[in-house]
Each structure stands twice: as C-alpha cells, then as structure tokens.
Amino acid sequence: MIDYRTVYTICPFCGTGCGILLEVMNGRLEGVLPCKTNPVNQGKLCIKGWSAHEFVHSPDRLKKPLVRKDGRLEEVEWDEALSFIASRLKAITQAYGPDSFGAFSSAKCTTEENYLLQKFTRAVIGTNNIDHCARL
Amino acid sequence: MDRLREGIRDALTEGPVAGVMGLILDGGHPRPHLFTKGRIEDLDRLVVGEARYPLAAVLLKVLRNDLDAHLGIVARGCDERAILELVRNVQLNGERVVVFGVACSSEQASACQCPQPYPSSHLSGERVAPVSDSEGLDRLDRLSEEERLQYWMDQFGKCIKCYGCRNICPMCFCTTCTLDEDDLIQTGTIPPEKPIFHLIRAFHMAERCIDCGLCEAACPSGIPLRTLYKKMRNVVTTRFGFTPGITKEGKGPLQYLGDGKFGEQEGH
Image 1 (cartoon, rainbow over the protein chains, first blue to last red):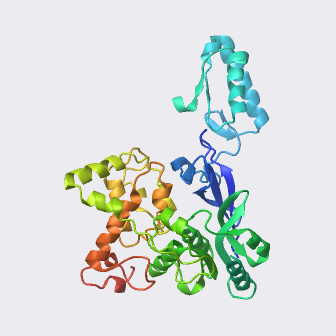
Image 2 (cartoon, rainbow over the protein chains, first blue to last red):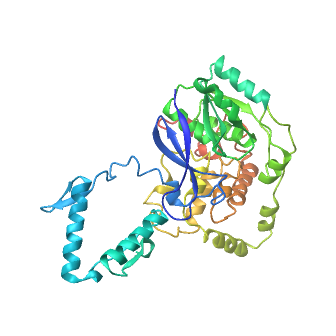
Image 3 (cartoon, chains in turn green, purple):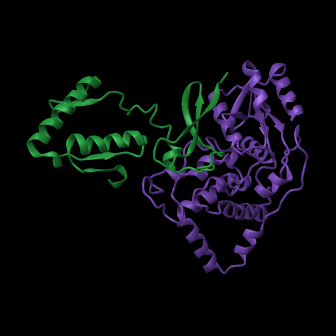
C-alpha cells in the first residue's frame, strides 16, 4: 500500500516565507502544494516554490564540496575544503588587499547566517564588499 | 460528519478500500492525506470544508504509483466532477474509486460561486442551492472586441509564469505538457508570451474544465482565469452540447476527428 503524506514547511528560496506542503510518497519527495491556510501566501506560490522539491533527489545535486585539482573537480571532505578556502583567502587578501574580496549573501540563509557573513566580510576581511544574491 | 467518518472507517476496516484521500488537520493546517487501515486513528483528525485542495489530482498521483489500488476520496461537488472527468478521460478506473460525498455549506458555495456545491450523494452536510456567477463573463461579453482583447492582454500582462494554474488543476493530468515544450513556448524566460501562453491553456481546458476555480485561487497575480475558462466551457456547451464533469462516459468534441473515428484509431 502506498504511503502518502505531506510535510508542512516554509519555502527555502527567498525571504517571503511562503508555506508549502511537501508531498511525500513512500518516503520520497514527489511534489509541492501551496499551503492554503498559511497567512503569507494564502494558497499561492511562484515557480520557485512550485519546484522546491526538485533539487532534493536531483542527480546534479552537490552532496560534498568540490575542489579543482589539476584542472578537474574532485570531491573532498569539508575539513579539506575549508582549509583550502581559508588559505586562499588569506593569501589573496594579503597580496592584493581586503577589497580584493567580495561576498554575496543569500535569501536562502537565515537572518543569523546573513549577519554572520557581513560580520565576517567587514570585521575579519575588512571590506564593505558585501551584497545580496538578488543583486546578481 | 460522524456518518462520514463511520462510512470511511467501515470501508477501510471491512470493505475493499485500501486508502481514502481526504483532508487531515495536522499542525494547525488542513492538508491532503491518505487515510489507511493501518492508521485508522488518523480519522479522528479528518476535516471537511476547511480548505480546498486538488484531492482528485492527488488521488491520481497515488494511483499512478499503484495501479491496482482500490481507493476512496472525500469529495465535494467539485472533487466529484473532477473524478468523473478523470474517469471519462481514462485516467482513473471508476470501479476502483469510491466517493465519500460531502455537501458544501451555503457560505462555501457562495465563496466558490459554485455551480454544483454537492456530489451525487453525500454523508456529510446538506444540499444547498447552486450559486450562478455569470456576472464577470456577461460584463466582458458586453465590451467591444477591441476592448475585450485589451482587457485580457492587460490581465495576461500580470502573469509571472509560475505555472500554478496548471500545477493545481485536477484536469491537468497529462504527463507531458505543451506549456513545457520549447518548440511551442519560450520556456525559461519571463514574462510569458501573451496571449499565446494563456490561450493554449484555455484551449486545452475547453472540454475538461470542471469550473472548480482552483486555478484562479492559486494565481499570485489575480488573473480571472476562471472567467476565461468559463467562456470556453460555455462555447463547448452551446456549440457541441457537451459539458465536462457530468458524465464518466463518452467523448468530448475535441476527442473526435472529422470522420468521428478518433477513438478507434490505434495508438490514440
């Protein structure tokens, strides 16, 4: 017998906060329905919300960080990726100054994560080159 | 409500029905749910009339994963029209779908401007009179052709191409969709081409639309889609004597070719 249920959550794509129902069939995410009783979206969604389930089982989804080695992207563990990022950031900003760095934050992040990124950019790196991904 | 709950409980525990699609109140939100024998206690949280979801479309989604399943559905008038139309279009096997009818209240009927706020039989609620709403359509019909075109072009200009009208529609059962075809529609770009994007959908609704209004309710831009599809329905009814959602047998006018042998041709 098929197991069909919905999971109520908030759309991950932007700061509007639309209520969505994830349709789960036999433990697999199969679709999205707009939540009719969420006061924010009142049963309506944009195309991002309607497609919010698609990346979860996508074969193109990145599950590990990739680092380019000898011209080829290779899967690595987080520790290695973060050490690589830190060492390169240090080297670049030391050689070219803090304004050689810029960061784009995201509506998909929480307020706290966005705060953290601007703090990192301004206080750790020392530049005002921080903006929102919607500016891209 | 008690009769409905008991009817479903009996069908699940004693009858051949393996699951019933309905709305469950969970976390403060009514939402589609497949009630099953294994979790019969879920029935305590069964709700009706709280919100409208395309239950027939969700049922179809479940049945496509389990073609032999014998399922039920808690159906308002609109849900039953959807079921009839899905059976007529050979998407559902009518003998494997049991309808547990719910008649809508007069408040719900007028909120939905519902042409038939009750199914053929019901276990919950009382039958109330249909609410006919042709006002919007009549007003548009009185405009000159030029003004009418301008009206619709202005409305279509609001479209953000979310595909919500198609996604929520219980009649959009096709597994491939013209509106996703790169050769016919510019996919991946906004705004959509108007009026072609909207008129393609309108034509595809011509002999299917059951006038449930879920499309209009899902439209973030407030385009009066129901009025548009109502017009298509009226044309099909007056010109061809066919109204979708009334019978589970027979062919609609677009299912015939000129020689009337469409249904007999192999591969169709």
